[in-house]
Image (cartoon, helix red, strand yellow):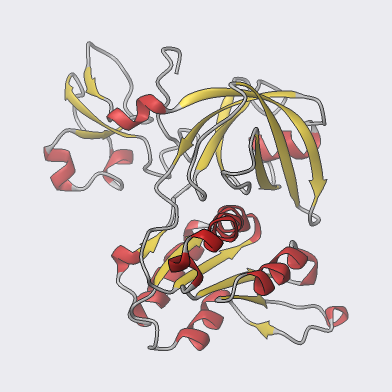
Length: 316
């Protein structure tokens, strides 16, 4: 990072996302147990290492993938912070230097957190952008408060409008693939962010790209109770604007006062009921916790969707 080379790390160096793999050609030494969960035997034979776990103790030679040299550091100013739910904030950042960014809808940035009472050193955390590429000069995130989370606590309790921030990116392989297949989106909580970005990008593009208009898109969004739902007006507007789009929301534990008449149960159960075995030619886009993603992959495979057509970024 000091040399302007930014390696992706969704988990902030905790060894739980597997995004920071690099090829080490000499000086790496033996593999650590914390690397083996992420580096398969064939990759080990090629010298692939998990860089956040590999300490530099001797001269070492590494190969950095060429595309990472296009990732850079951005400086911006907090333009707006909005409470969307009791534990999710929308954070909008005006870019200052450089004043614009090019990215694909669905990608993520690493937001830098300065030293403060919960962290004795600066750290960074990965957040998907909820803004769309055509929104010039800004990036936007949906950040859910995680108990004792270093970055989320800083955002929710310390960050204010007008503050200066830094971040790096864009990162990730999570973006809409060009095809004619049906699109299945599944998310929960702040996992709304990259899906919202992709949908906003589709809305922007589809009048001039007829192939997009013909693609069916079903978005399954899971929440616990009614207070965890948000951006419903925007989703309803998109249902009217995009001919093939439908938004299916489900509550896993609605409260009596919610007077909920919609889908209930875990989002995986709702997906299973809706898809059945009729969606084998679809492709799926997932954003949520590792446990949710794992469960969704299992259900989607039951429904006949090949795993190489199930897309997600692992933040660990």
